[in-house]
Image (cartoon, helix red, strand yellow):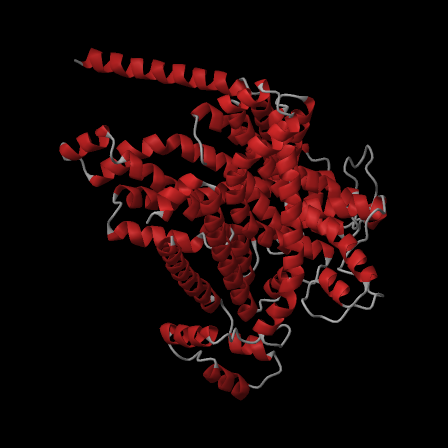
Length: 339
Length: 298
């Protein structure tokens, strides 16, 4: 098993290396002078020349890439031409807000997706199955920015059930940053009001992110439940008079969790990319909104860093998912773990 | 001699017609797939004939009429008007033109190289050719397509051409991966072995023996992907990295309208629904095809 994980890690490193080459290449073939962009229009030609020299822009492409990779491995992602601060510290500041959002969305989509999937599968062809099927079709067909705008419009602006944009109201004094998770920081500072307000602000954007995944996971669970229901042991349990709820959540849910976990690994990356839109709509001060701002301002260093961070997260999450599945599913463990 | 060829061709043609009829029968058993097809035909129709159907075709360009600005939906303006007085219904019809065109061009540009690379890699599995092609594919699949497409368009100048190129660039690897897995199992089939033994060229084996057997999954995936490409296209336009105003892309219209929520809800809700409807149609059709062709994992 250690060998298998090691092999996977090696593969991920190779893929990330390729990704850095690809994204660096694109960033360098873009028309425009990166030195000029970093300095702004007011800088003199000599200043630009000096910075070109510092950034190794006069060297050939492989040499440039070598210097860039070397500073990358030292944790230096360059300076953002938009915020004028090191990209690495920018990222460290903005990532917790996005993690808070994504983890919450994952939780919502897992719970709601499982429950609706199990019920829809068990009560197949009932009205509940029909409605959840319709909703899941709509959920998959709706871009995340449309979901975000619709939810903001209906629940915040028309019904006034939820607060609008941001993590906490502007008037509210934020707690000192320790973990970067607003809800946790509120608790650590002993300010319950912040935690509750932060939770309320989190609900709509997290749900906007979760909708498409609720739809997908619900359908996968339903398919798996329908399959498992035809197994003889379920019939046997029914004949023995075991309670429906016990059959549902013990004997039907467990086998359906494996495909769901597989999909959740893939979903994590899609949550990160959909967060670009949801954070933009909700003005959520997170990594994805930072990334979006960087892209709209042609902030090359930040764009490259953002793509690499997402690629790294994707690789890491997929590895974790594979390991979890090895523990959940004995057949996979025997097939791959033996090596 | 000639008569038998003719008879064979005729028989083959009859068989093909029977297959089509049978396929359509299976497809039409699912009312949702038929609904998807009906929606799609309607959308394509209004997109093609937008200049004749739209009540105000001039509003699809730079046009201002502040007297009619920000009007709620009415008999004159089914979807209302935007803040500079353009008819949103007309602009939505023209917006469909961009969505469908971008979807078709992106798949046209992306599918062909993806399929060819997948065929070669699958047929020559275990050689360095396969290693190179599939590892490059992995690199492109290492980040979600939306992120890569956003990053590429952001670094280039945002316009229609660059948007289509960026999406096509992130789209081909999905096809090379799909066709790779199909081709690498098909190459062990007897008809491929037979072609090899009779000395058929590699081109013949790839394109005449293996490719026709990949047709069903590719078609199904392309249908589902039309929905996905339109989704990504609308997302790029939404953030301002796609078709530039005053051209009416649906995503751009949603973004412009969102600034005027909640008062002028119609200027964002209707274009948003238009996007959902066309993506839904492609998904329904794709699901129907998946059942007809009995393909999984697409």
